Image (cartoon, rainbow, N blue to C red; front, side, top):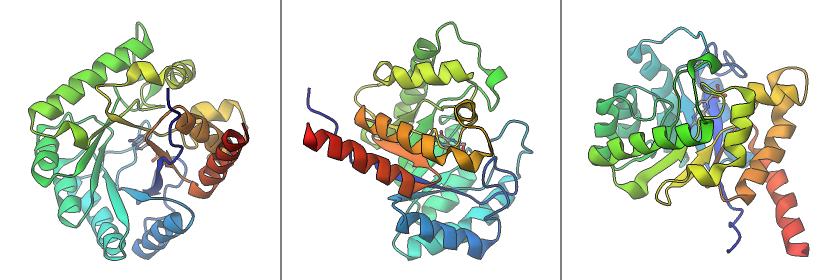
Length: 265
Ligand code: PMM
């Protein structure tokens, strides 16, 4: 089997929220958010993933108008600067506004459960990331077998998106690490990504700074960038198409290490 290219698409995380778990409040100011989006690209991101609603367990839902008001000026400014933007939202209206402003990718942590969001993706021709989740908290998931169940859930989401008119080549699946999964379920999913593949669709994985990594290194979420980089590079080595990270430079460096090792083999 040919080796994966080790040139994954790196998504830099930009949360324009007061309450996201690792960077909440830092980029709620518009100029700070735009500046950080540009910095993410300078440090190695191919795409900036802009979100206006925290997905942390227990977070207050945001009115979609407020969510759009947070993200739209940021999307507009980044797109105007030639940056490829993904909009991280569960809401059709937010997806529509961001895509109209030039976002190329809709990243939905609800896996396209809202038919309106699927219509936006179908009509716009934007790429669509369908992330797996049964809810934001680890307690929301009840699995007989996490790998089999997540694969079956994702298949349903993919079929719904295709039925709504989204071309399969525009779809990306994501196992939703940390969403409705206990730590050992996250690790099992990561160890069995090949069993989650659907029809050769691209796969995005986001492990960055997540709580299950906190068991490996103590301290605050920002201290998990090192383990995030190592794990992300290992996932790229297994053929993952996209990596969603807070610290693109660290992941780029880890990818370079794996590449050197391969070349020397
Ligand atoms: N994780 C978060 C938010 N959005 N989107 C995708 N596709 N995959 C993820 O794993 C994912 C996501 C939560 O992390 P954050 O609060 O650091 O943004």
